[in-house]
Image (cartoon, rainbow, N blue to C red; front, side, top):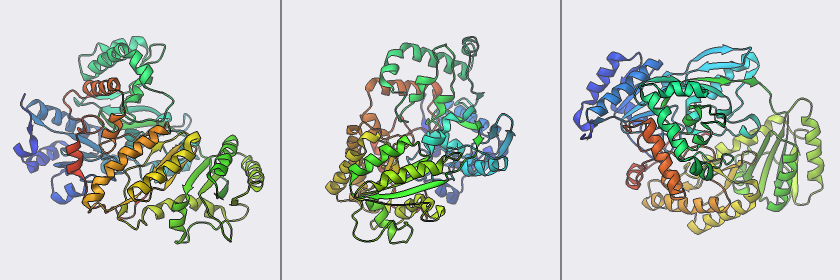
Length: 545
């Protein structure tokens, strides 16, 4: 069938008018609206043809069904789900229809206090959710630094919150998702017994086809999936969750497939999550070190005490924001800091005891200075976690764009990783400072780039290639805190086994046979598409993490 570019064949105003006649929510084709939704937090810009703000599940179902029918007629319509546009990889933008669930589907639907279960629409933010749960003394403790991430966006990106090592990751709290498939069918996921799986496989629908084909793929590629996918590694590239879909007892659950899938396999329209009783950190220590090896010893000692927070800041990060008066003074006189650590302890009655043990350990070391919540107000030390926002907005060259965020590096390689990143910065003449969570083993690097400069735009992907080599040499992954989207896709696939690439492509084909769900994300990314979509400026107002 001949597939033509739909924007050339169909009036966008007519499309929007047609959708408005059938949806509870609204469809927009106005240029100002399209411009607003042409960027996310990535370095890319792709202008959509229509923006739909759905209100209910049926809106999404009708929209996807419409795109499916248009594609059958030879007019390809891509559908890109979007939360609040916080994606850093270009996965929340697309040429076809952007589905702005973050603007229209953000209701807190139901709570079962006894079972600690909540049912929400995907556009509700984690901050809004936990604000509502606070009334019941509960929370979903998967907190990213920025509370404006939507629940759907966190699921779609496999986003690892900065406290996930202590509180858990978003996938650990999701009990069930309701999803609109590429055909417009709506399904609810859950773990199925063998008998229930066979019943699903007998359905004459896309849902039945997915269960049949995915089960066949798991059988045919069992050895490759077992050998190529490390279940314990922090890697959100491709569709690695396929490894946990089928349990040893033969039970089957599609839910994991939608984590880190970035809307390429289905559109999440409702979520049931499990909440926990709220507990906040009580005691902190902030320490600076002249020697990276000493800092590593402290990290090892702190981990044994099971901290709730263990954040690391390269000296350059602290130096940059110290001039703004936000960093707590940990001492006077000459001191050449290499790295800072913020260590937090929580728990019922144990936090003070752990703090004392940490103080005693630090007091024995040379080249260290520190303060604790006994010395300064707790709020001042907690604010240390906010200095990153000042750093991100204080580049002397252009903007600190989020290209190198979210690498996972094992703690044993932390010193080597920091040194190699610094060497990479010297090679390219850019500042390459590191900050992140040691507990999560997730680190970010934010050099400043002037996207108005051709040479800077060209250098981004050159540095990305060498940065990927550094991370790989340290036995890490580029996609520890979230999926690859468009920006990291080419680099990630270069380092991926060919057989695994084929498995990922087959998964995409099974769930989205006509290629309408977020096309050009995760699989099928072309160099020319990335180059043509590179932004010439980056104006996001205050950059927040």
